[in-house]
Length: 243
Image 1 (cartoon, rainbow, N blue to C red):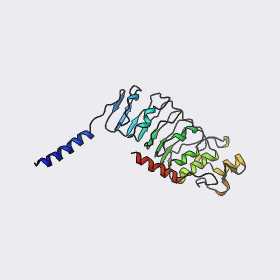
Image 2: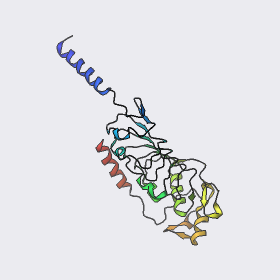
Image 3: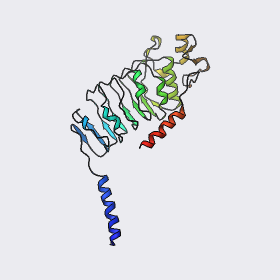
Image 4: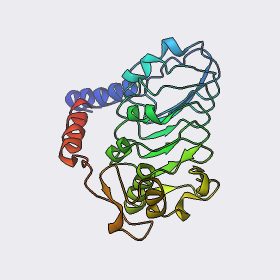
C-alpha cells in the first residue's frame, strides 16, 4: 500500500475511534450508546454538557427542581422527568423534542417555560387548571397528554383545545373538565365553547367573538393577539445556528 494511501486509511481509523470513544457514565446511572437513566441524584452534578446521548431519564428521583446543568446539555432530545415533585419548568435546553413531565406538580402558569421546539409533551397527573395561550407558540407540537389534571374548561382553554385540533395535534381521550360546575366530569371534546362563554359572559370573553363559531372543533381566531409565526421561525433559525 502506498504511504499516502496508508496515511489516509490511518487517519480515517483514528477519527472513527475518536468519535466512538466511550464516555464516563455518571454515578448512580445506567448508560448505553443512546440513553442515560439515573436511579439516584448522586451523579447529576457531574453530567457533562457534551454528553453524547439523546435520551436522559431522571424519573422518580423526588426532584423538586430541575438541575441547572440540563440547560447546557446539547445532545439530549428526549427528557424524562416524570414522577418527581417538580413545580417549576426551567433549565431545559431548546433542543428537547420529547418531554415527559407527568406525575409532578406543574401548574398552568409554569407552562411558558416549555422548550419552544418540543414535539411530544406529557403533562398527565399535574396541577394544570387551564391552558395558556403560550402553548400556541409550540409550532412543532405533535402530541400532548393532559389527563388527570383539574382543568377548568374556560373560554381560553377551549380556544387552545381548538387550536390543537385544527393543527392535528394528538391528545389523549381522557381529558375531562373539572369546571365550570355544569360541565364537571364531561370530556372536553364534548363541551361547546359557545355554551361555556355565553354562560360566563353573555356572549363575549377575552376579545373572542364566540358567536362566529358553531362547532366545538372550529378554530376561534377572534380579536386576540396572534402568535407571530415570523418571530418563531426567526428564533428557530437562530437555534439551528447554535448547533
